[in-house]
Length: 181
Image (cartoon, rainbow, N blue to C red; front, side, top):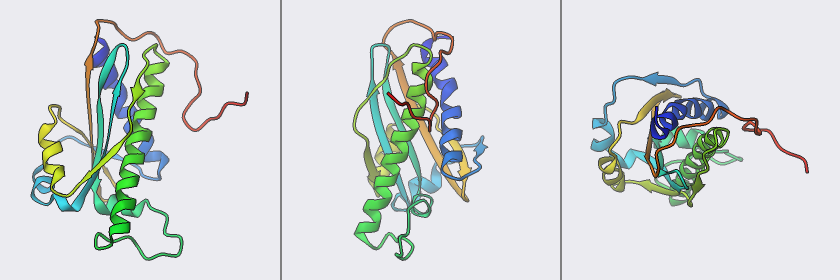
């Protein structure tokens, strides 16, 4: 198995771990139906983060329904977020970026344990009609999960810069742990 294939094996583990960490019990979907997403892109938001490194380069996109992200926002005495308020739309986009960042962090951590270093760029958000564009640009089939009654799509697109394979897993800090110096 080459490095690119090996990295793709780690992605579902990271996806499921992320969804569990935010309080969901994800169920993996086999069929991928992008028709509802492409028909009503205004109902969705996505976080995208590009990465590079000596061995791999690519991007991660985490996309779901607006309400999936809205349900994960702290309410702090406020009403449930709606698409009508610009501030709420920005908060949803911020959460989409943060979750994409956390997902890439989990993937990066797993790859680092195996000797592969990824260098992330800054995440960015996409919503509305731009969703159609970024979805159509994807070359891979997404990983699809059901969480909180919504589908969560994850695209992990990666290219190898050189022909290497993963090393056996090493000992590093697990997600959620911290290190004292």
